[in-house]
Length: 173
Length: 101
Image 1 (spheres, rainbow over the protein chains, first blue to last red):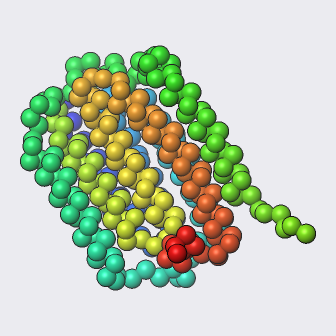
Image 2 (tube, chains in turn yellow, orange):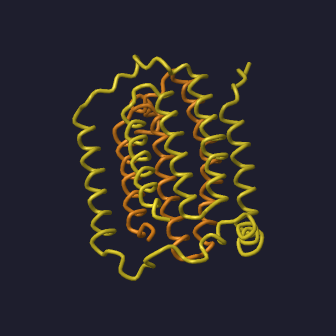
Image 3 (cartoon, each protein chain N blue to C red):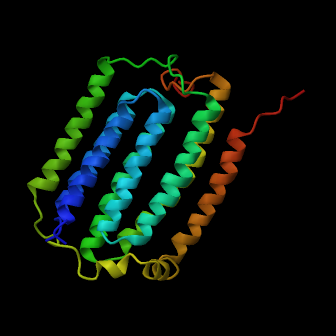
């Protein structure tokens, strides 16, 4: 239990470092690999928060499925060599970073200024029982069964849409 | 003692802002797309943290749905990027302005 803060700070530093490296990398393949590293550190953080099922899903869905899709698209479009896409520091980039920093200060003001008043001081004692497959399953097929079914509709629409979008158009005679 | 809740919220905010900065500064559509995934993930982290501190399933169920939406968004977004590349031979979002009047 005493190692928990140490693990948290290590994972937080790892997540922030990989996120920053992802943004500053010029090569999109390297960016994708740093993003996968970030997803793994988030999965480990979910484990600290006793969300076992979500930690596994994070690796399977994000690091597995979505990032494979991204890497495939990078490969298909042959974007490894990005000399045609020169990005240099300009006025707009400075504005973007300024806006992002202002946003960060705003959120830090809210999260730290108000403090932990009214929030639970520690993990809920039954937190470990909440994230199991059993309790997630009974919630998804009980309380959240309607959104769960709508999700299947959404995924079907996404499949059809992706096929229609990526299909090569037949030339009309 | 464990980690207090604001630590998770601050980490989530920092990751979100890194994603915002990436979306605002990068010009490669695929990198912008990955930055959006990063932002979705940072919000997931705060949802999981709230769920764990309150011992409630709602936050985790919400993360489950966010993951499903992210998967759908990934398929559609990458389909759009492929269609754009086929038509314009570029993924630079500065040169993709056909919706601008």
